[in-house]
Structure formats: C-alpha cells, structure tokens
Image (cartoon, rainbow, N blue to C red; front, side, top):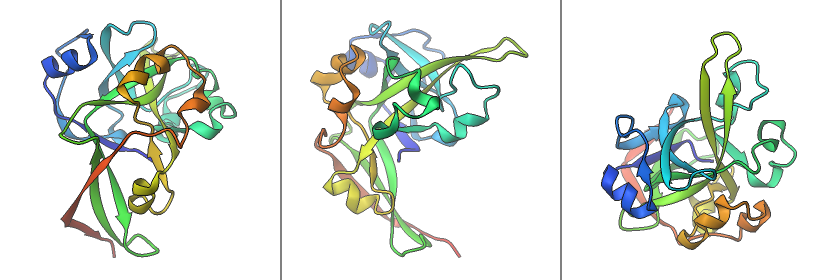
Length: 213
C-alpha cells in the first residue's frame, strides 16, 4: 500500500516538470513526509484540466457517502477491484496525477512486524513523478462544504517492492512520463496493472529500525 509519500521540489520545479500552473500557490508546501492519515491537501492534476495543478485532500470520499469517515479506508484503491468497489466505481473515469518525488514503505523483519526497516522509494535522483490516482467531489449535506478528494491506485508488487513490502506485497502505480496523458485520457484501467511498472530505486534507513514491544 502507499500511505506515506514525499514532495520536496519547489513550485517552479513542479510546474516545469508537469507543464502546468499551480492554481493556488498559498496551498503549495514541500514535505519530507506526507502522511496519508493526516488527510491533507496535496498537489494533483485532474483529467478535466491538465494544465492546472490543484490541491485535493488525500482519502477519497465518494459523492454518496453520508460522512467523511470512509476516507480512512480509501487512501489507496486496488486496481484489481476498482470495478467492484462502490467507493471507487464512480471514479473510474475521474483520473488524476498525484505529484510526488518519493514514497515510504516498511520491511518487516519478523512475522509480527515488531521490527521494521524504513525504505524510501523513487525513480532516482529525487526526480518528480506521478502516481496514478482517482478523484471525487463530496458535499457535506449539513454544512454545504465541498471537499475534493483523491486516492492512489495500487497494484501487485514487482520484485523489488515484494522484497520491501513483504507482507501485503503491493505497490503504488507510478506512471511512465509518456503515459501520464494516457491515464488522464481514460486508457483502460487494466493496462496499468502489474507487470506495468517503472524502474524504481530504494534506500534503506538502517538507523530507523522500529521495535514494537
């Protein structure tokens, strides 16, 4: 799965890489650890306006949801079951690019996960990339607040990620630059499932071994 990412590039670097303008630069922030469970605003590009970088909340809330609680379960969407899951079914053709330059996973060193090693994964050289994402707009029926939200699509882990994410063996879908427009133009979802992949590199943080008692 993917619950922690990073985006440390400047606004200008992001705009140059994606050939798009940031809609509201006051919302733009850099972070070494974007924690999905904070459900914060992060930069994305949606299919309806690929020349603009918007900020949506991580954790997709489908339009039919009565409240926001579902977002705890929708940080990621499994590509194999998107068609079957009510949470994502209506967003299959609401595609977005989720902007990042790294993400984190923890490798379990024992069967219960009491000892873990943190890994940072990316495409090398701290380069920017795009996760494949889906988005939704939700309206709070009590307050009238409109919330734009997204999820990151995951697939079966490749060889590298299966070794790192050695419990659930999943990985987020990172799009090849030449395929970013295809994703936004609604190419069939299954074309982006594993063995679709980009070359990934990983860095371990041996001093960050976490021991849980």
